Length: 474
Image (cartoon, rainbow, N blue to C red; front, side, top):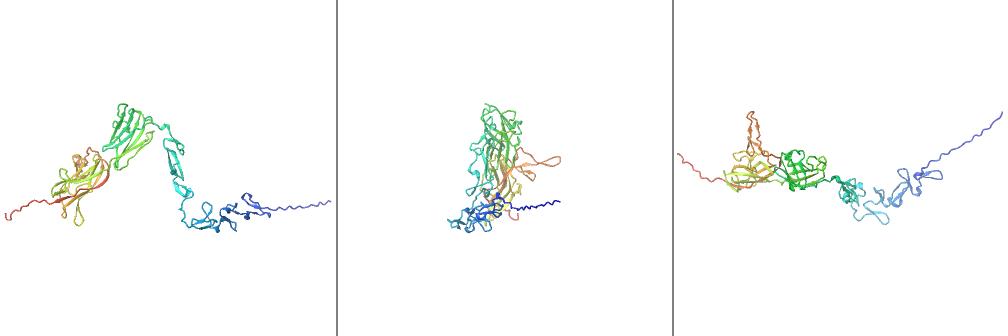
């Protein structure tokens, strides 16, 4: 029997640590994976072996951290560099010393330190559009710290080049845009149109093209160069709200069809502001407004005075004389008004005022035997109240003060004891005795504002009439 001798061979495996060379680590002779601190390297927060940039103020600490050199007084700025704090300045040897001159004003260093509509330029937050970066026919919007340029409507191209925005050919019309002037009248709105005599077409108020009062057919060589197109109130849909009257005027060359070449203008009249604007737009498609032509009427003014029955202003009267208090709102062809909260005033010697309410807050006389109701004169333009001269016991001087409600056109009448203000009588239905307000032909329009007015002062004396007394006993 053979005996076979078996020899066992042992293989020993030694685990060698894996070293991340891609992160800057090195393997020492004793197989240690290290970041070579002796060469000025350190391990950053991401585990990478980085060189500490001592040339820009960093130093490597004993525990392997790379920080701004505290020996020189450096701090880490928001830009990631080592520098002196704002209260210090760097000396010639690179050490931070206390600043002797005042620090520079605080400013920006990056755009993000500014509002979104501004950018950082040399330490200041400024609107980027202020550098005029856009084309001639472009608008600029400050947004996200940048100047955002866009070609205006009717233009296309590169808005950042000087002549980059070019007019689109399809915005042009086959007839020139006319010159227009808006006249704000008391009974309506008139548009004076300076148009080419060769123009052959029609103009009308949008929505009322078939109404003869709201349209005008223009024929070449027949109509004059300037056309007065007037729209009266309560026609063609023209109404006013708080003194604003407006409509859309359409001009088109085709006498029957509305094409994309038609022009539409938003016409506005404002009677209680001083604003005046003219903004011309572009051609219309589906009657999009091409522009706005606006104008204003003159602001209202009020005058109140005490007169004799002939309307002449006076400065003295005797008790019992027949007088009138007259209020006029100008321009009278545009505005009307009614008076309320009227008081008679006098000044006492001690500086105090006596007052007596003659017209209440509704515009009605408190005592018609002393001071009558307000009425309109024959021309319908002046408010008149008739009264007999009176005075206060403590003074011979008297004047009046009223609040005048100004209306566009003619004010709505106010009922006082069965009568409408301005002399209009209510009538009663014979069947059910219900009151029905009389409707005059004049157009009543909206209230605009209230103005306080005062009359002149007059000197009122007692009547010097001899009195006779019958003898006693007879």
